[in-house]
Amino acid sequence: MNRSLVAAVLLAGLPIASEAQSSQSSQQYSFKFQGDALGRYEWTRDFFAPAGTEIPPNETRYRLQARPRVELGISSLLFGVGGEFNYSEDENTEPPPALLRDNYKSREARLDLAFVSFKPVDWLQIQGGRFEMPFGLTEMIWDKDLRPQGGAITFAKKDKSGNTRFAATGLYAQGSHVFDDEKARMFLGQLHVGGASASLTGSYIEWSKLGEIEPMIRRQNTRLAGLYVNEYKVVDGVVRLTKDGQLHTQLVIDYCWNTAVDRDNRGLWIGVVAGSTETAKAKLEYTYASVGKDATLAAYATDDFFWATGWEGHRGDVGLRVAAKATAHGILQYQRFKDSARLAEQDHWVKRYRAELRVKF
Image (cartoon, rainbow, N blue to C red; front, side, top):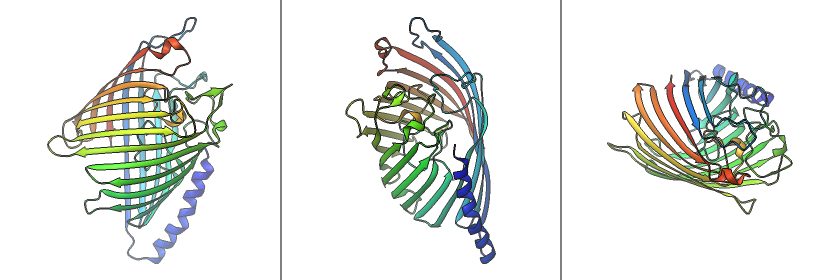
């Protein structure tokens, strides 16, 4: 990844912070240490194993992850640094596989976040470095564990309750994957309207320099001799309907369309949530998705379903609050690689069971 880009952005902010500290006596300072941790055990059943291969039909593995971060605020500036620590039963890069299904290295300590955020007024925010994706995308487009590396600017209007009524955002990023994609570039423009009970988010995402993406990163898109054939200029719309009360409920509908290709270019993601592990004791969640092979760029979509594009599947999640900042989850997934090049695999359903403990600190 382009560490020099991160360093340059952070260093550029230091003189501003120093000048502000010496010239204003009413500076506001803040310090925050926080993070999250994950413990996961998973069982995968009925992998498709073509004749003559050594792919096991069943697999189990565990994964441990911790992501601590430190944030320092100085008036309108916020500096943040965070790490990611992973340990998994398998070693997913040794030996290097032909195709990697994960968006993380199973045994690694790495820089996860390194950013500066400038918010001179309530309606304007400028971010630079390596930061959390600041948009309302679902995991059909962007894996929540990945961080864009570059810069973003957001103009937003909030109501008295702090809900965003309108926002316009632009983002440019390069080298945002955990693995080597140094020259791969992404531009994202987005408009958001709505409030606490209903919102609509429209995005345009375009990727370029795809030849720089490391070959073992997931690439379920159309390729010829290992190279990408198509462009990815994706229009994405997300509707969120939320109802609070004794039973918190939410409906999320995400539809994407890669305007640069003519077939296998649409994706649909539907999520339903009932309950909450923050304001109540339990939550039920169901997700259905059907994603065309070239609906979006596979390298950056969620890794939870193995195939980032070209798949169809269901996911059920039962979550229980077991402590003030800890939740336990039982998850069942049922999915198929509907656009596989192997005809026999297209109707072959794979089952995945997961037990997870998630902690915030």
